Length: 101
Image 1 (cartoon, one colour):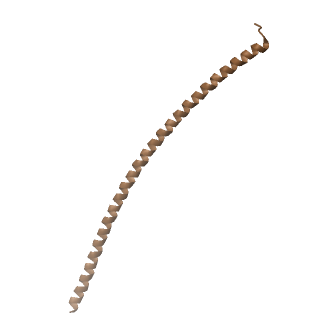
Image 2 (cartoon, rainbow, N blue to C red):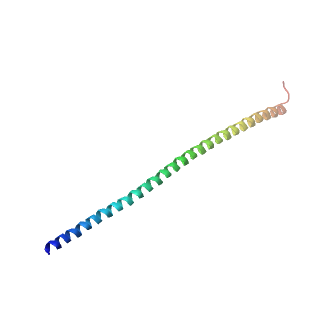
């Protein structure tokens, strides 16, 4: 009878150990799937971030070119205004000083 009780106890311990191992394997599979999903989502986010980075660089480049064009336009207007001011000063001088020449 003692032998049966001892073998029974060993059987229960072995079956619990097997159940523990199977549970660990199942848990490991679930974690592996979860990690795969995380890696997939991270790669998608990295791709999205790279695309956004490229778009932002293009927008900034376009903005800089627009600023350069606007600056050139302002410089042309100032240059033209300076020429008109010089001509006006010349005419003013001619009117005030008379014709001497």
